[in-house]
Image (cartoon, rainbow, N blue to C red; front, top):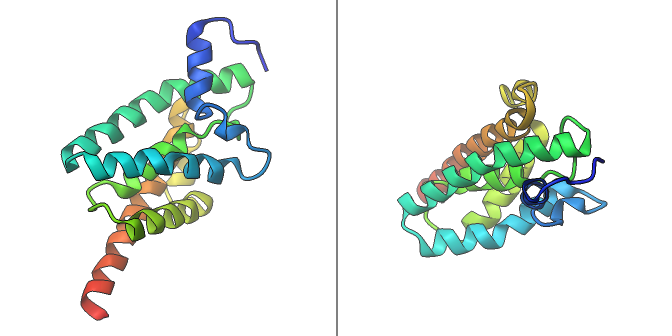
Length: 160
């Protein structure tokens, strides 16, 4: 890994690894998603839906350059330690859904499943350059998880 040369390098590495959560020696993506849960819960609980949507956009927009810069510094196309993409994907998973603990838990599980499976076009999105490839596949996985969570909520409400 190249040594960070500037404050921006250090900031990018901090954000990209969620301040070290992504450096977990085992399942860093899952650890990164778990580390994102408290922020997601706090914002989903306290913000109106448009505020949570704005937070999701801000995280996704910040994730792309942070992930790209961290990948260059780590000299790897998609380093395992970069987990800001999991944060962005989790937020997309929860987007537009009312806050509840079951929703948060279900969102976590479904996002991890979709992130591992990478249904089309998520796997193809990994080919995008730099931070775009690192983040976009997780945004797509988050979209699939959001739709699956909505279907489960609908089924629970109408067929239980």
